[in-house]
Amino acid sequence: SDEKTKALFSHLREKIVALDQEIREEPKKHYIAYKLATNFVDLKVRGKDIKIFLNLKSGQLHDPKGIARDLTKPKYVGHWGNGDYEIKMNSESDLSDVFELIKQSYDLNK
Image (cartoon, rainbow, N blue to C red; front, side, top):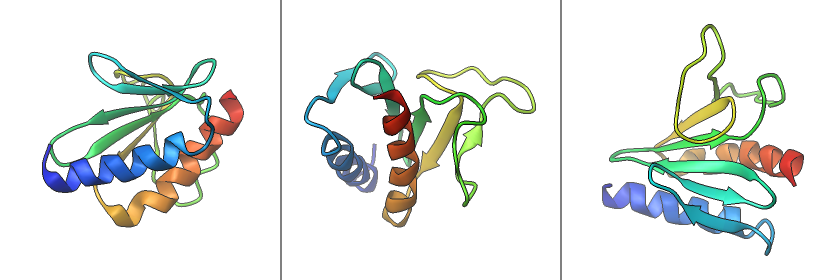
């Protein structure tokens, strides 16, 4: 990953683990899982961006800005991580909007 992506991951990670002191970070082969009883968000850090997978079923996410992609429509897309939603994040300016969606997954999975 480039330095910008590493810094973006660091800021996102800080916000996620600050949600709850019970959150566990578990590095997997293809992604990093953040979980309580189950994963609520998975991060795949790539060269120029971070792919974020929200552990929510299709239709459960309130996404007024339309930044998440529903991986079940029009046809199911396989992926590493859990859930039916994917977000690609490559800018610090997206952090607050993306974090609001992550918080929805946290609230529904805690």
